[in-house]
Length: 280
Image (cartoon, rainbow, N blue to C red; front, side, top):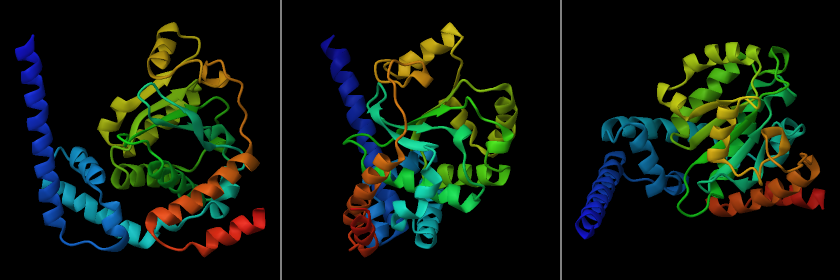
């Protein structure tokens, strides 16, 4: 018993040392970084890029450099809630007040409440939510879980195929390994047809993280229970909690998060301060 335990610990230590060596190797390959790029490239972040490319340093370097280039032009850390709040009025994306069984932050998504046709607006909204969630991840956590209520979804309320493709590209290439689980809850048949088209743009490895859950299927709901505690889940996901999205309250929370974001990235955010004054 002792030998097996000691052997397991030794293997873990060896694996950890190898990962640390890969991180140092990738840092050296990228070269000196400054400002926001340096802040972004934490050891935890670099590890995700390596994992996404099976620890191939050259491939991870290419991927990370493309992300740094994208961030320098898109500037996701500068997006503020008042710029995207109109996209969130219906509660199509929100951050839950509970975690999954692994302690991960949970996004609640309701694509059936799609309220705009702006591809850019939808992208900036999701990017804003991702950035906000990542900054607030608990220590030791680097991933999120998505709970997607697909009931009420229709083609007329969906984002365009182009926007779906662009979102998939950004998530896979600029937020690698950030989404540990995606649950599509109660999907109508027409959504399954839409998904067959969208998944053509997704990394095949992403499929392993996707679960389709049907409330009338006992085995399917057991899968749901393995990831979430029903005591925390809203009723629309088969849980016991009555919960309704309150845009005003969520906006207050996001405005406060904007201040934390500005502090995290190390710049004086007069834009956020002005927005808070107006709202108070």
